[in-house]
Length: 225
Image 1 (cartoon, one colour):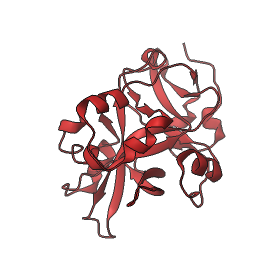
Image 2 (cartoon, one colour):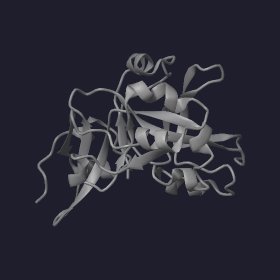
Image 3 (cartoon, rainbow, N blue to C red):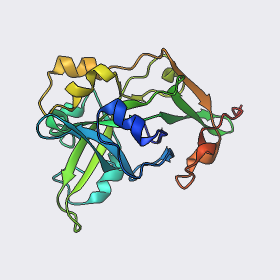
Image 4 (cartoon, rainbow, N blue to C red):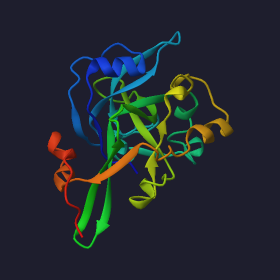
């Protein structure tokens, strides 16, 4: 599960990492929540890349109601190719979701304790995503995305039984190419990212409210017992 994440980076850095034009009006986001608009990277015609804004929560092209997107924020990598909601997108509409870190919650006797997970060197990375275009909106076509999840690595296993798929940079171009990938290649690319270089620490429950989107969300806190 990946229900919240952060994107704390300058537009110029994002442009360099993903080889795209710098996104306009990019602001630090410390608490990105489902149904919000965020930048993603996908392939353009001709093989180049573009950074566009999409809503988090995939709406299948055949859906009659856009509210379904709030339940489609994640897709299990092991079954996405078989699910009607994702099997078309995983063939030719794959995308990169830039991120600086993400959150998971751990049950404790005093309630759920949120943790922030990121790379210790603060690097920008990318989740593996799928995107879809929904044409039934009254305001015109609506592009939405979901984040693929996989089994946890050694670090995440102590927090949750799933983690978002984090792609290595060497796979970025192949991932967003609009062509099918073999089942074996998909399995290889969608495996858990090694825990080396990653760290997790407790933060306050401030992150529980989507309206709280500031640096306080990632401040280290004393864990509840």
